[in-house]
Length: 632
Image (cartoon, rainbow, N blue to C red):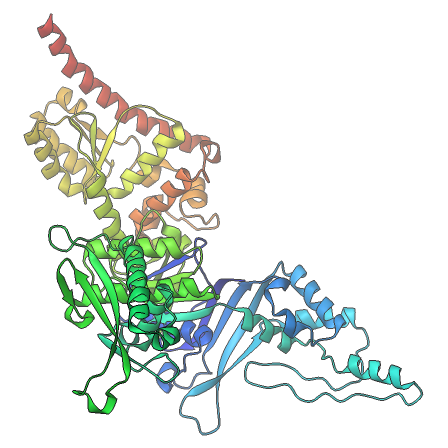
């Protein structure tokens, strides 16, 4: 069973999210500004799939009850076979045929309805989004349905007693067989919806309020943790394979041996995720101790409790004595690993995991998520660039308000159309892209090419790959064409070899002329060895024919372009960096090859790349010439 996507309607700021697909690799990331609706998405999923109650604050004024539709990939074997045994064979055959016709993809509508006099929406019902399709298949298999009373299932109702018709003409044995046959229910569309709903992954929402590891937690009469912090304590026990009831019954030496081994096991596992070092050498260790209340707590004297420590080296502190970030990470680790260990179907929801963590700790969180994603699908929201892997754009869903509509409802933009999201919405992604480049770019002594912006970097890297060029070149992107003179002067001061490439538009020509004057003394000969205007391109996007631009960059062959490619990008406020990155990823993943493009695009790609190589080869030839003469 796999959840493929969802659609949320009439929940908080969301009027209709439209269908939103989950990421194909098990990690879906929501990015957006504060108040954009990211948390509302997570909470709606938690209400529909995790059993959380909806309050009046979650509903929209004068709107229908909130509905969450989920699209699932389900096989017949995913369903509860014991439950299926209570239905007639014809209905089971119809269900198999129904799943076969749909390829296992089924849409469910999960709706909250209010009980009479209730202050919140508490009842949840599940139905097939298209029950008629199942009914048609059922009718085809059972042309004349038997005239016996049947009941339907929903999440909030129970089965009724089923009567049976008697045939007085038959013998007692035949009569019993007929009664047994008629006791089986007809598998209705509502019953199918319930069976699929019960097989869905259970959504777990990590809450810092309820999930933080406590200093101590009480043990109840059944030998289970109870009270504040019980959830995190239970997570600790589950990961460490500690049977708490047995621990309560054992003697002191038994408890000490069990806890010593368990603490070491859990600490070793935790160390593989927490890479930060406290001080010069020590890393964090986790400990759990079994204690009894003394006379100082008269109401609980003699009763058992658990005590937790987070230590580094010789410093042993309670969880609450640690920083908020350390405590958060430990608690998050415990819940995520316990969820994995339970081996039940889960969907993990996480709101702002990097909020209180250092950059290094955020990388640890992301590494933990990446490790568990195949077992547990994970959805998280974030503002942090460190929680985004920009090369995995397919994970990103941009959440923002649509100010063009009344009441500014929340809209969700999928990975295929991220370029349409606002720069503010995409700021964590854009920061991640820039931060990654700043860390990865190793400035070389030769064959450097300074570009106007990062979009040019992505396109040119793609052209190099498409054309199979082996020429050495090192692209370095500025943050705008007007920043190129500063960058060029820095390279000049460092004594590094470089060339500058600009678009052949008004701003590009202005910077070209400025650099020609400042660095080349207005000499055309010197400028030819240092400066390049992309031939016939007012913007790097003009390398593409309009047909190729629509098909392979915009990925919308039906887009209407009244002007140039660059004018379209500007008029529609598409993000140039994100659009260029999406194109590069398609090339890297070999979803696009040179054969995908028409002749006009290929020729411009060749002209642009050859122009860059020519100027670099000319510079290299000139710099090596005098050396050879001198050496001779």
